[in-house]
Image (cartoon, rainbow, N blue to C red; front, side):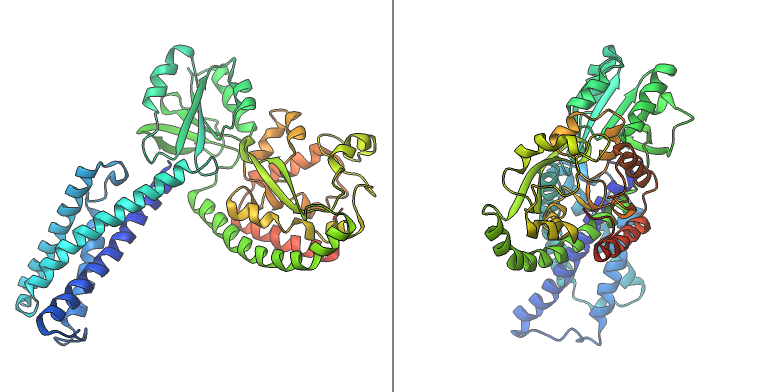
Length: 456
C-alpha cells in the first residue's frame, strides 16, 4: 500500500469517527432530556450553548486525529489495541472539553451527565464503525483480483525465502505475493501469471538494470529495494512495502488521487451508460432476434489488466457461428499483426452493421466498467488467442484497465492497419496519462461516434 492510499484509508476512519461523534452527542443530549422531562427539547435550549460545544468537540476530535498518535498504525491494530486506542482518544477528547469549559467559566452551563453519556456512546459507536470499516476493507481485498495487486519477487534464489517472509502481506497491505523468480525465470513467470507489481532485489549491476528496464517496458510497476538505488529509473517515487523502503518506477505510475478520480468517473459514466443501454436493448433486441435468432448480448472471454480474464459484453452484431467462420476469413484480415479486421465482414447481419457503424454495439460494456473489469478510457482488450501471441513488449498495453474508448479509437481506427501502431498509441496514452487527457478522449469519442469517422 503506498503512502497516499494508506492516508486515504486513515481519512476514512477519521470521517467515520466524526459521524460517531455526531450520533453520540445528539443521542446523549436528546436522550437525557427526554428521560428527564418526557419531551424532546429544542437544540437552541440554553441560548444555543450546546451548538457551541458540538463545534468545540468536532475541532478537538480533528486536532487529536491529525496531530496525535490516536490514528497511528490504526489499520494493523488487534481488537484489544483498538479498544484501548478508542478509549484513550475519548478520554483526551472529554478532558480537553472539560478543561476548556473550566477556564472559560462555562462548565456550570453544561450537564456533566450528558458529557459522560456522550463519552460512553462514542466509545461504543467508534468501536462498531471501525470494525465494520476494517471488515469491509478486508472483504474488498479478498473480493477479487480487480482490487488486489499481484506482486512477484525477483531476487537471487538464496534470498527468496527471507524476502517472502519479510514482505508477507499484512491485513491491509493491498497486495498479495504470487511467487518468487530469479533472473532466468522472471520473464516466463510474468507471461504465465497475472502480475501487477514486481519487487526487485538484486545486486547493483547490468543484470539488475536489465531486469528493471524489461519489467518497466512491459508496463509493470517495479519496486526497487532501497539498498540498491538505481539512479536512472524513470518516474521514480519513494514508497514503503511492509515497512521496507523501496524506489518505485513504472511507465507512468498513477497517483492514488488520479486512480480515485478515474474510478469515480467510471462509476458515474457507467451508470448513465447503462440507462442508455436499457433503452437501446428495448429498441434493438427484437430486431436482432428476428434477423439472427440467438442471444441478444454477445459474451466473450477477453484479457484485461496484466492478464486478468473477464467476460466482455456487446450487443450481438454477428451470426452465432462467427467465431468458427473467423478461421476461414483470416486471409482477408486487413490488420498487420495480432488483431483481426476486414471490410464487409460476411458474419455481420444487417442491423449489426448499423450497430457497429454507430458504435451502439459497445454500450453493454458499461456493465464491465461498473464491475471494474474495464474503464471508460483505456486500451482495447484482446481475445485469448490474440493474447497468447503477444510478446512481452505487447503486454505493456495491458498495464492499465482496458477501456471502451482510447487513443487508438479517436485516431482513426479504420485507417490504422498495423498492430504495432496500435501498441505505440496505447503506450503513448499510458506514458502521458492524465485526467484531462481522459476527458479529452471521451469528448473526442462522442465526435467520432456522431460523425462515423473511424468506425468499422
